[in-house]
Amino acid sequence: DLSVEIPVNSKDELGQLADSIRTLAREWNHLRRERSEFLASISHELRTPLTYIKGYADIARKNSHADNGTYLNIIYEEANKLSDMIKNLFDLAKMDRNSFQIQKQNFPLLPMLEQIEHKLSPAFQNKNVTLTVRCKKNILLLADPIRFEQVIINLLDNAYKYSEPHSHIHLNVKKEEGIWKLIIKDNGKGIPKEDLPYIFERFYRVDKSRTRSLGGTGLGLAIVKEIIEAHGWEIHAYSQEGVGTTMEIWLQGGDIIEETAARR
Ligand code: ADP
Image 1 (cartoon, rainbow, N blue to C red):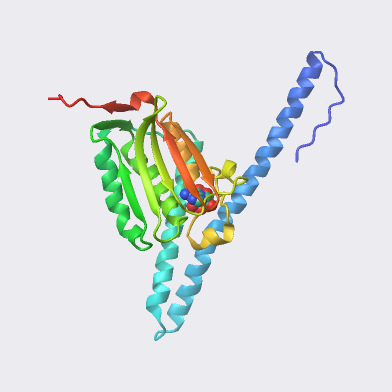
Image 2: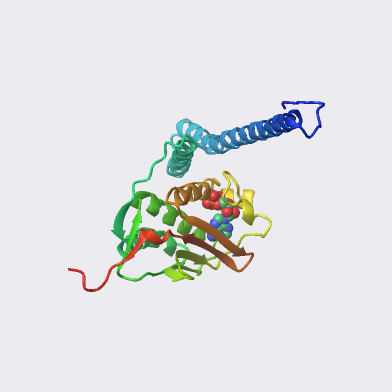
């Protein structure tokens, strides 16, 4: 750590300068610790799937008559996980360099949500989880369609991952107290109160061992938040352990257009 001891405590300009330098040093140390924790997390996260890939590839190449199909499947899945994670890391790095740009355009919201529903429902059937989408027919959204889809898929995927079989997930688009909101509600395991403030942080996971088996990396919500904020929107999380989680995206008023029926 950078240690600065300035024996100046006066209230004058020199004292203020000393205060500023002490604050800077504290910030510097904080950032350095954060960077080091971040690198440690990355190394760990990248190494885990690689360990599986190497291990099973080794078994497969040594035993020609062993159950290579199983090993190859694991290798394939873990390699997929790795490439997802690397893609996420690239996204975050781009966001950090401020070279992340979104391209907003108008598109009808309901067909977009239905398309996402269509993409996810085969996977949701594995756990018999149902998804209900409610959105007025005539809404146009101004957003980056690719990034918007990424956000919704990420949130729905979390809702699914942390739900028991036979659960319900609701996606509603509605105006509440003058604000257009996109609300994703699940009745899954919920998030403990003490963890809730941190879930948008990089690599933060509530239950490290359990979520590992669910294939999480803790990067999803960090990216979701960056994308939401790049749009000028807000995301709010509400949750109660054992009851469920609600994620609300508060859209900017100007980004929603309700088409009138008499449009030619
Ligand atoms: P992960 O890849 O682990 O899902 P995320 O950044 O998407 O990472 O989420 C961070 C953590 O927040 C998760 O590990 C999980 O503990 C918690 N979480 C996110 N969404 C939900 C949800 N819908 N229900 C319960 N827990 C959730």
